[in-house]
Length: 310
Image 1: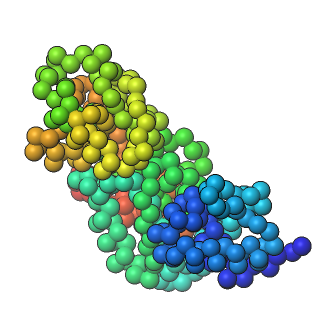
Image 2 (image 1 turned 135 degrees about the vertical axis):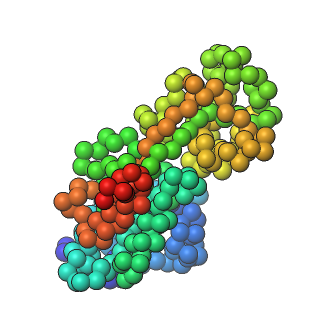
Image 3 (image 1 turned 135 degrees about the horizontal axis):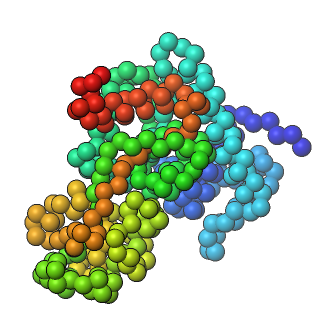
């Protein structure tokens, strides 16, 4: 049977996709700004339109049916095609119009080396008709969304393993291992802390950070899983409790270091300085909107010496 897609179907598919991304109806309420009853009604309407059940929901939790999995994969292709069409149309006029979906890693703007806000200001001044949406996520999610077209560009730390993506260094950051003042290592001088002491400490698994090569510490530590490992604030709370140590950005932890609530542990073993990267699809396929924003990012993050030579 041939299915004719209308605007209402695209809206319903986006709701279904949001439910899938959030992992359930309840979790999707905040993202969608809709009540659970309204979401359920929209899903029932979509299933009627599609002529099949797309997911199971109930006491056992949210789970896609086989048909639902097929619709999700087809939706990814549909949304990517719509974005490409929108980008192409935007390129036709003298004034840029359309949408830019930008992804950022958590706490990107707290880094003093970040000039992302300046780039956004310049971009919005030069392309006032473009709608800018900002999404916060961990780098693995951001990279996946650039790959499937949901994001046009993302900024964070990445492993640079996707051959179909481009990675542009913007600025540097610094990460190191920290403990709180209640931790047994807090008052121990660095030269008295052995590798064994660090290995014995309860280090939190930061999830995606553990897989990024540029963030690998010079000492390999066993880590403990935490439901907070994607959220810096949750990790900081565990460190401040004195019961765990964790790899944190220096700029983020500095306020607690200054107030005597945290300390950096053995910088020679734990301090690393990775680059923050912009990731995007091949420049040959970039829309005028994405190219313009990328140019502003590159301009704002040039060193003073580079700017003097231009």
